[in-house]
Length: 206
Image (cartoon, rainbow, N blue to C red; front, side):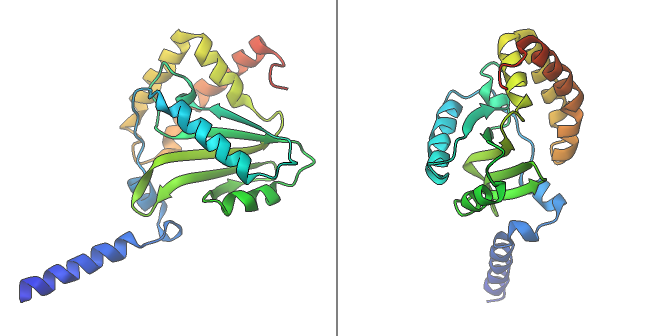
């Protein structure tokens, strides 16, 4: 009977831990639950983006003019990436971001950060880890889209894309449980080639 009681107590403790909400977790706990993980490119990532793009179009009001783009490393089919689909949603400045935020939050997106002109949302983060499909949605006003230039540059210049991949693979294990450190360590590289891309492509996305 003692063993049964001990097992029941352990089971209850595990269930209780699983029920702990994301908002109740410390940053350390979140980074442990959602580690940095890289994998070679998967052809189905494009479909995941297209499916979620359709979903976002249904969420947003039909009278809103907006542009939805696939950004980040999963949009570059030659390099390894975190299996998380980054999506950029651009809207005209006449629209209220708070209203769009309400619509997204009511449809399984979690607002992770926001400033006057930018909002960041996650979808697919659960108390038990990543869901099968995970998305990061970046809500911006039209023209705030440097990621499009960087994406296009990596697609056109294979050698630069390979350098970026090598950098990420090098940083992976060092920052496996430190997402901010991982992101910050890539900033200089991204900034350098984004600036080159904007000079090359000029006003492609203005």
